[in-house]
Image (tube, rainbow, N blue to C red; front, side, top):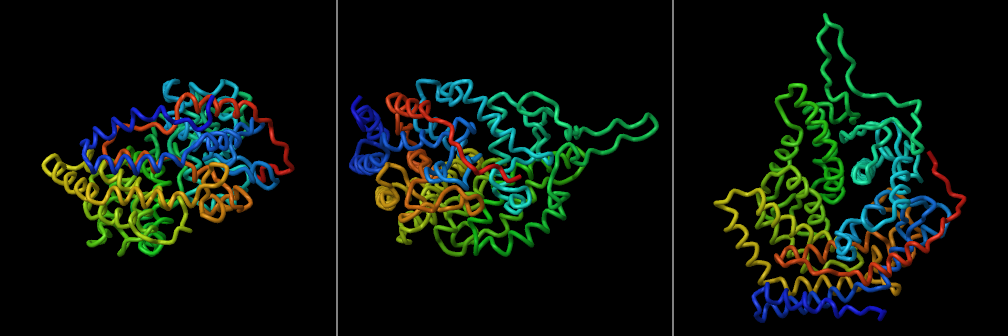
Length: 468
């Protein structure tokens, strides 16, 4: 098998050229895309597969984290690897589903890894953090909840305890034994002469700020409002991570007779604060502002409501992509810019009224056609600086961040690759933003490379144990 042989992509390049109109502009876009795709190699495939620890049933985020004490596998790493396999095209021949690619004992090990992290309050705690430490990081706790429940459901398992986003627990540990501290959260039957108590969301644990509309608005005013323009990414990340909890609590309140929706309350609150010039919440175009927008526009798409300023937002995003902010910024910020543009177009297509949708899309597409080639090439040049000699990508040009999104230690902070920096969302967002049919990054050839390395991994023995 010849190393780094990607000649199989040629038919896709020809198809892309034709889809874009088979003109000079189309040729330039294809040229830029070829440059970008050249960054992804066999070495990256091997690097990711080596992060697996069969003893834990999960993946590490970095190689230094795997081979040094003080670090343990990461919940979100499971999601990132599975997404990489599916999005890359590597397992298309297996139906594009990681469940068809992993052996049964590996899928069981992943499910057990996730169940072991859950505590009676329903949340899933990172194995290297105590409950008290992790509860301080609301976005991380919410992301772990979301990832764990999605994967348990997909793998055919239930969590041990009922979860804050509405998934019912089974009261069993990983060995199938009942846990002594499991308490069903279904409402108790009332006596015949007593009214049934309102559930008031009792079937789901929830934080105090989701008690009702007033407490939620107080949370938004006290925690979010002071930071939405100055720390837009942190704010956007927190709102995005907790939105499913907001929805679950909102559904419970509506079932109890509430005349309001917490989700609608959030959307209305956000709409009132959109800047009239930039089209989002920051008052000037910056990486941080656009990254915050990327996180929040996802809420509009999940809830299925139109975003009020899509054209202005698209202009600001492209300004950010073409900007010259220092290349030492986090690589994920570069990815998020293209994701944001793709999400804006998705919002227009899905949720804007038909009488305005076509006109709005035409305006956005015209902006992209005029500035697209330069935008792709500028992103490629910046991305190249993050590529490590082993084929992986680092968070920054000179080192990997020691903490995942500021809360969980994942490595020594060396100049090395990090799993979440190796995602393919930027390529797919560029392709999707142009309306091009998917161009695979990898194929069955690369899956065989990944599978061989994955199955050769041995359990890692460490002194580090879960702290909780």
